[in-house]
Each structure stands twice: as structure tokens, then as C-alpha cells.
Picture 1 (cartoon, rainbow, N blue to C red):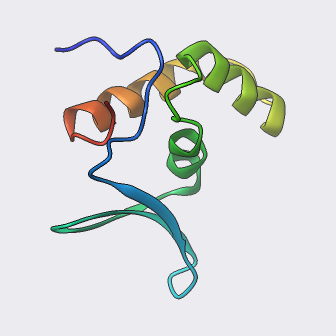
Picture 2 (picture 1 turned 90 degrees about the vertical axis):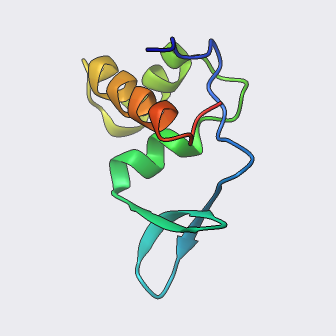
Picture 3 (picture 1 turned 180 degrees about the vertical axis):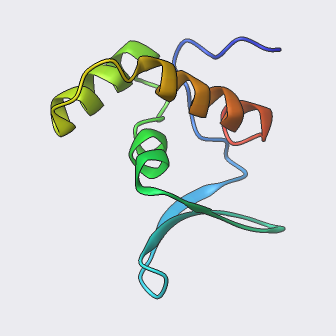
Amino acid sequence: MNTLPAQPRLSRRFRLQYEEAQQKWVLLYPEGMVQLNQSAAEILQRCNGERTLDNIVAELEGAFGVTGIAPEVRALLEEGQRRGWID
């Protein structure tokens, strides 16, 4: 398995946007669309190629008043990388 980039970035092949009709965040790509749950959307919104995994986790923990979410964030990013969402 590839290791995560130091500063994860959403692949240029995907566009993250809020779909008002579905009341959900989605990843759009030429072949279709992936509906995201709120947690996944919050994580992917922070994948701009500037934040590290630790930065993303710290922002989320601060924003939502939680701790210990690093394993879940890493798992989502690894799955996103496997699916080609993350560069």
C-alpha cells in the first residue's frame, strides 16, 4: 500500500461540492458521483495540499470538540487514496 502524502490533496480529477437537491456533499468526476457522509466531507474539505494529517486532525478535533479521531481520519484518507481521490 502506498503511504499517504505528507500533505494530502484532493485529486484534480474530482470536484468536491455541496448538492443542494440531495442535501449532501459529493465528489464529482467524469464517470459519476460519490455521495459523502458529513464526516468524510469535513475531512476532504481540508485536503488542500497544505495541511498535514496532523493539521487536519487538530482542526477537526477543535471544530467538533472531540479527541482521538486520528485513526478514523487516516483510514478515510487511505481509502480515498486507494480510490484515487487523494494525491
